[in-house]
Image 1 (cartoon, rainbow, N blue to C red):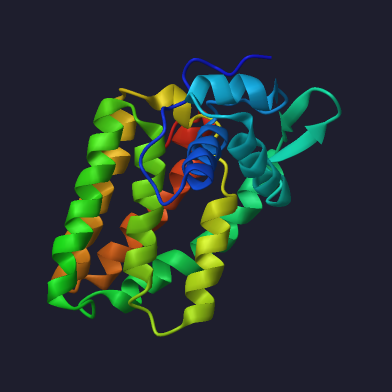
Image 2 (cartoon, one colour):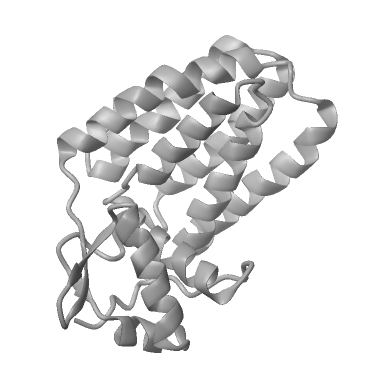
Length: 223
């Protein structure tokens, strides 16, 4: 099959293979490349205006993460993740990330907020422009940067891995909606609460933010 026309164009990164992998991972996580569909390396390479080699290398890395599976003589099929698996990942994240925000409130160095707010601005911009690669990559960088203020590297790495495994199958349908804009704005809200030292509210915002995975991004209403 040819790739969806909604697959987001590449953004500059460290090298070509990484650029391709970031774009493909974002397209899979957001549902732009739907589960069950088969994509060939040459077709994706044509879409990105690159050779097939970095695409194949990127797909092989994504196969190790369980995002795709090789289909002989055809390419790679995007794997299906069960709702139960998504819910389990979200449940573990809820145990880890909101309490960490309570712990970090008032403890992040003041000079760190300028960079964090710039990342939050990029997330908001990605949402406004419907650029899901920018949105998801900036979101990853933002939360990792916040979490690195913890003194527990095992916790930081575990959260990062869980976030990387989180699929957001309905996110592509949220482009140019108020829900996506509200989710993006929550990053600035979180920073305001962390900077003011309001740990209880920061914990609540993060709990709501993670909940979008099985709420809005899953096509469900949230109370």
